[in-house]
Image (tube, rainbow, N blue to C red; front, side):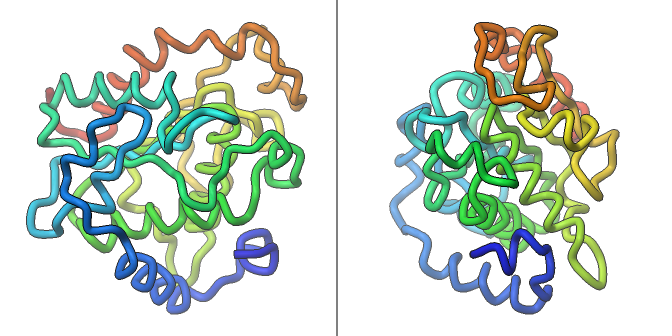
Length: 237
């Protein structure tokens, strides 16, 4: 997807659904044991619509992190959710594919590439279509926050109605668009967004200076955010 779609937020809903259906049909069919690596998770893409979980967690990693989940905040949140609900009751999915998590993409107008946002849109829509009754929670770290914010803002802008009702909570760590978006996601309810920004994390103040504070989200990712997301899921541990 180029700037004429994601950047301008004008893609018709019918076209979007056709794109999602195409991507879904092309998804890999490897068994669910592919989930063996904490840095790469594919349960949403590989799971059966006949066996939907209690909740789905989609995460976008930070710049240069490995796999599609990364090795810091994403796996920490996922592990806590799986501990609370049981691994069989949570599908974990990282944003990979067109999201390369490159350094250069941080400097683009949306804080990441249009293709990366398009990949997150695909996964959020896949969750809605494959498991329509399942709550979806999401998260992002560093550049990954721009990926999720862009995707959700896009889905919130769709006509005739937003395609975000299934997204019940979003946790953003070191939100690179925090200042620009006033601590929120455009068009998305504020009470569904939790921003975790260290006081000394410069990226939260409209810059791309990466200071030591940008790497201090272990407690938030391992404890605070999972508890908050569980509350947004609305199902007790």
